[in-house]
Amino acid sequence: MMDTALRLLNRLGRRTMMAVDAVGYAAGLLGESFRFVVAGRRHGQPVRMTAIVEQMRQVGADAIPIVLLLSFTVGLMLAIQFIATLSEFGAQSQVVLAVAKSVTREFGVLITGILVAGRSGSAFAARIGSMSVSQEVDALGVMGIDPVRYLVAPALIAMLLMLPILTILSDFAAILGAALYSSPMLDMSVQTYLTQTLSQLTPRDVYEGLSKSIVFALLITVIGVATGFSVTGGAEGVGRATTRAVVLSITAIVLADMVFSFFLNR
Amino acid sequence: MNDTAAPLIDVVGLEAYYGRRRILHGVDFSVRRGEIRVIMGGSGSGKSTLLRHIIGLQRPVSGMVKILGVDVGRASAQELLTVRRRLGVSFQGGALITSMSVGDNVALPLREHTQLDETTVRIMSRLKLEFVNLGGFHDLMPSQLSGGMIKRAALARAIVMDPELLFFDEPSAGLDPVVSAELDELILRLRDALRMTIVVVTHELESAFRIADRITVLDQGDVLTTGTVAEVHASEN
Image 1 (cartoon, one colour):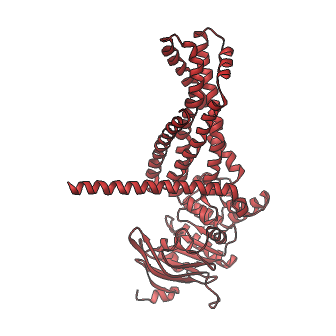
Image 2: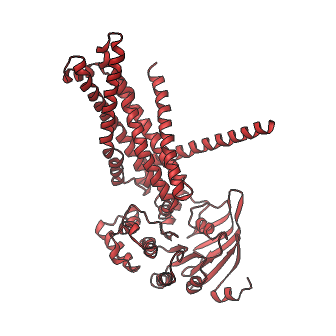
Image 3: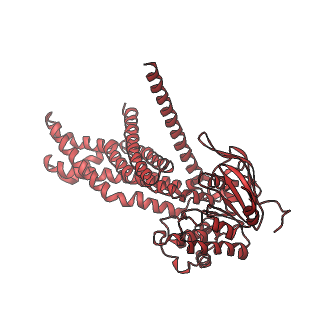
């Protein structure tokens, strides 16, 4: 009995140490990346604009169609649910407000974050992971090219720039989806619906979503690249890392979202 | 060869561990300018670990590793990056960046470390590819090359900055004897034509005896013997 308890305690302690170690490593990667962005050029290690633009294309531009499609669909579903629920209280006209606030504060950024975690977080882990197992990361290092500067910093900058933009697009698509469904139900034109939405939204609503998107961008990047750098065990290890990166990113996003919502809506 | 000159690589009492397992047991090792030094040993002898310490991919836990006058254990990250620009390393599997063409791989160090214009970069990368007999392969992707071609392309990338020191990790691994012999010829040509100092890690006896000026034999983390090919042949070890 005592032995089992000690073993469990031992395992818990080891896991905790590993988690602390991983968080420290991820924070170090983040710090290194920002150092290269700020002072890399001075030390002959600049973060290349071409690499940032390429990452912006992969992370952002290529994700636009799927972000628009999913956000439009979720907006439409929200409208269906809100109208059904609010009509029980005779308050279906409040659907404009409900959709506007919930999309800009919560759903737009959450859908975008989860989608980008699935697309780009996994791509970071897979790319860096396969480069690690084939010694490409080592090769960069011995060529005097810091892998963090070359692989991580462009991805981080691209994510920080593109996730807020994708979030705004997601907000638009979701509200449009809701407008197309709700306007005939509420006996108003789509244009009137959108005008009402704009009049009921405050800058704070949009700011809340955008500030979350910055945090999500940091989480997705750092989890993706840290998981990639820690890959061992060949192709199988890369597969495991990719799955791990997606699961950890989405978990981190949802937890961070909860914390944000708690503090920003009290 | 100038025996009195300071060695380009000087390893003293190097110990290395993976977890609790001791891989290197106080290795002493030095390489003089202009020589081809082969590090030999069986699987698990510690030769790749020694190489990783010399090129700064691992920092020594105990002992000293000095390369081109820089103490790897005490060097700052910036000093390490600077010294690495004077090295070339050809990895066992080539380690070409798979998302780039062969030409872009070779041009990568030039684009990262020099202010050369794009035309010059392309000319220089083509010249190095021609040196390793891959003149027409500039625009191919690494996945389109054979094993021997990948090793030669990796060599072209390793020498594109005209390094003082060149390292090969298992150049013959996975190659047939003909391609392996061609690669050995190339290594000899590099020393003679470009006066490079070359360190080769291998377990292939035939290749080692063909190219080495001196051979260091490692066994279970210890240096068994160091000497010329004739001396190693004559050694009781």
